[in-house]
Image (cartoon, rainbow, N blue to C red; front, side, top):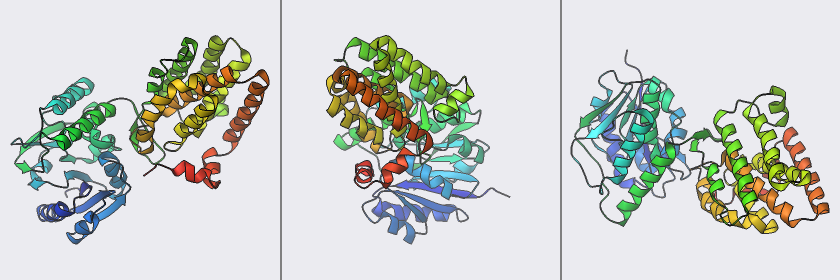
Length: 413
């Protein structure tokens, strides 16, 4: 017997097109479930899809890859066919043959710009997997159960197609492109079209770097190491210490195990978390030449990392702290402001690299601003916060505290 099939469509503000698309897919695949992931539509996309016979799951406006990722667990086990909301044409050939991932290649070019985004996407796929892709950005894809397991959660935004090809190839699965006569709404050589392709290019590039899962199971690019590139006007010792914290955090992001918290890491012994717990104070000691200063920097780095459990939380804490301590922290405000909207919208993650680095920035700012007594009081407060974080959830405390909870949610979808 053929495996069950679910057709999954990500749609945003497609009221006029989603109905005909769903009806055509229903005729082509009468035994399949049609599932529409409504990515924060502001029109009647959801109603139109339901009238046409689809089941709809609605999400805040996050992005294509995020909507598909959040909707995928709603689909039955078996094969999965991804389809754009504005497609016109027969996708049945994608289910023929034995490939694990079959990608539709358009027989005729429609619209588009100068091919920069597509060439860049091909280059990224070739660099990460050695696969030669003809249609690296095609959203029409058939996944076998094995490919579904290897590729989900998808990368965010328009990076989902590029990364899913890479993941399937690197998992040792068969990937095939099949030329089909399809039509869809094409972007032209105008401001809207160029902006769309610029987003595709940026999100494809981010998707090909290191990624991690956030609290909702979304797979997001880890960009926190970029904090080390900020602070050009900060003293050299601060830049060195922040870069050290970022690199140690990145190692923990990439190779950490299930251990969480100081006790778990130190009890386990040789872990990336233990290396970070010892390495950040060592780097801070070398750059501040003060045991008290090193302690303050290390505890500040850990405190901000403890807060980084929801989008935007650590960045908000950093910006508030930078306004208080000023000094070298001011030099890192621009990079934090740049990263904040991506973090809030769950397009990227700071990870330990970014949270530890930004916390270290606040620590260095405190060392330069506070008196010896002020530093001792700050160390005591941060040590108390660390103990609380080891025994209780700081996030839960924030969410239960009036005022803090509203500020914490500010800016999220």
